[in-house]
Length: 134
Image 1 (tube, helix red, strand yellow):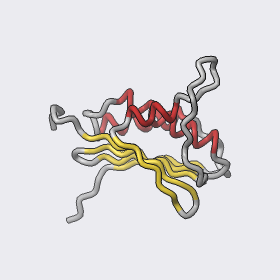
Image 2 (tube, one colour):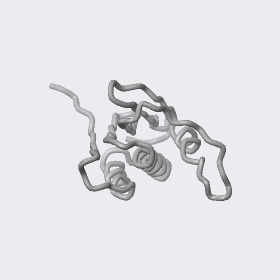
Image 3 (cartoon, one colour):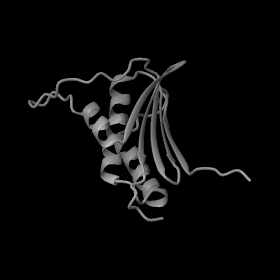
Image 4 (cartoon, helix red, strand yellow):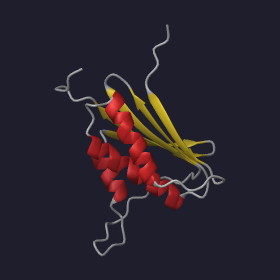
């Protein structure tokens, strides 16, 4: 018998009506309620918002957000059509941005960026805290 992990996938292609981070946040919040009640929902939702916003803002093609819940882990994976890795910028307190990538790196337990044949993958992983119950 195969043990499958709960997963949800949210996708956008250049031929679909643009989907904003609000839809991804709503789907993520529901996924967390069902499969990862132990996760820090505020942190995960901020990371999802940043990853979706950056994919929409900096990618002309498709993107795919995948949430996977293991017993002891939560993985938020954003794949997109841009081969360029995220570039940390100096935060601009005058409203010019530059906070998002820094927040992603601070809020997730681990962040990896890997090239794909047709873009890149960003994977943010959280481990279940030792004090979290079943």
